[in-house]
Image (cartoon, rainbow, N blue to C red; front, side, top):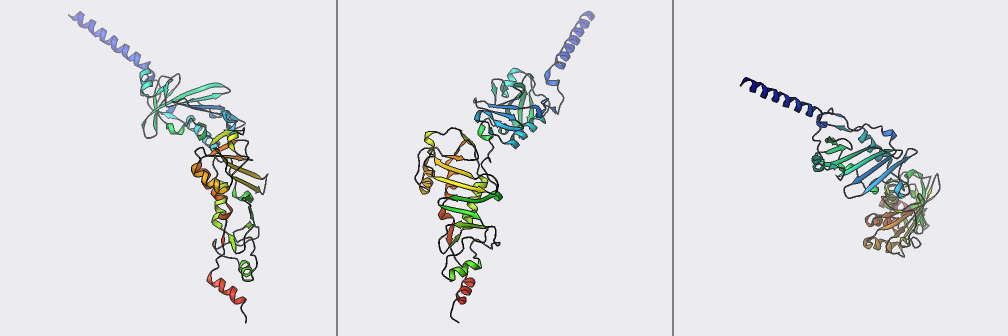
Length: 367
């Protein structure tokens, strides 16, 4: 009986020892907590490929420290956005491993054939690391797994930070101008230009004294207002509308692009019959031209373009001398852009305040 007890005790000890050895060799417990997930030198990475579950993907490559979209004529990518992504990946930490089985990888969507996002980092055409990003588990926490490692972790890497559409990585401000570099803007038969000798305006309806005097004498008022800008031509009895000027400058300094149409013109771009042409002269550098036309059909006037903006399902084609690319502006973006560059939005009738008008009248009344 004692021999049997000794035998069973020995078998139990052996089983416990085997279990301990197996567990100590498991990848679930082989990694320290709060360690860097990727052994990564971000400065050496020169290519990033992001893919989603639907087969969409985008590739970003670095050339002379500038990130580009090689599949889209090497158009510039958002440098800050790409830099943030690399920094996030390089500093990504993981907690304790949650699982390490193939079934768990499928369940958490971090398997080679089942993932929410896949990020591949390359150096000189060689894959350095591939990371699978899967299901969300908590606020900003997502299941992740490094290719070649069975361990599955939670990490602070939301899927929305990893879009697989190129339009999310485009340098959106590529066609923007800086307000202080704009000297003049010409469109729709008029020109807005800076007047370098001006006073500070009290409001966009206040009149300068020389304009009041000109009106009182029945003469054409000066074409510049105290805004520091002038409009040519300007009808008698009208002045520059500051809100219209502000809208023009806002469109030029806040223009955003995302959809690229390539660098080759197509027949349905209709740029031979544009609805809007804008020319900007800068205090430094060459002048900049913007040309806009509806993608689906041509329009014969700016007003017609405004109407088309309400109906065109395909949006508008934008071409600028700042880039060889053609861009697609969605209808909702094209409409306010077109409306801003209309001459009738830039002036309004002069309305003098009572005190100023009375002073001007008294100056010309018989004494």
